[in-house]
Image (tube, rainbow, N blue to C red; front, side):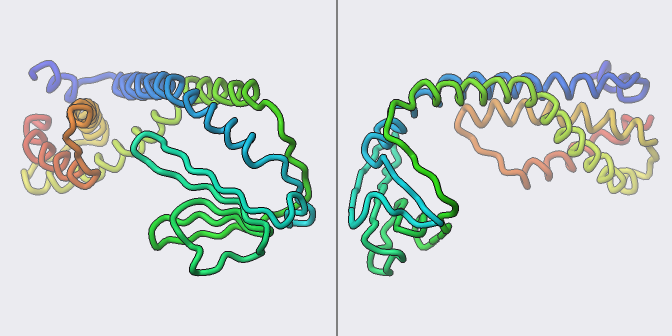
Length: 233
């Protein structure tokens, strides 16, 4: 604790490096999880292609297949997904709006509970029926490498913005404790608190205890109130 307090008082800006390290660890772990789980969806996507393709669209309307109804149900872990292709109609009727994804001649419907989203088909193109597995595997690889290469810097920017916001909020703790901190000390204080609390919350979440963003914010403010005076001494 004494070393952390001394860093807050006299640190040389290495907090940004630790934020980048935290962002990199998170990005690499996410890439690992995506690389492990996303390929499992490839057989389902190929199964979907085999079931519903080919499809030909002209000027935002399906012209092939015509007057066709195809329905397929998927069990993805605990989730149940129903996909329906119905080219016998342009607009989905209210009595047909069960949970799932529907494609009519002119629209794609996504229905989740009482929420109904409709997206009009656009353009003209032909989606052939073939083996998309190699292409899907390439897409997975692109996604994984994109997360691994861009993710650390993206996370770093998000973490830095969060620390800046918390540094601004430190003003309340300073007023209540009747102390004064310059901007650098505020940044160092909140960098230490943010990294420590973020790591702890992540561990607790994997243990099954969910911490909301608002709760995280309240804990950060409480820690500021407890430690701002020591940082100023």
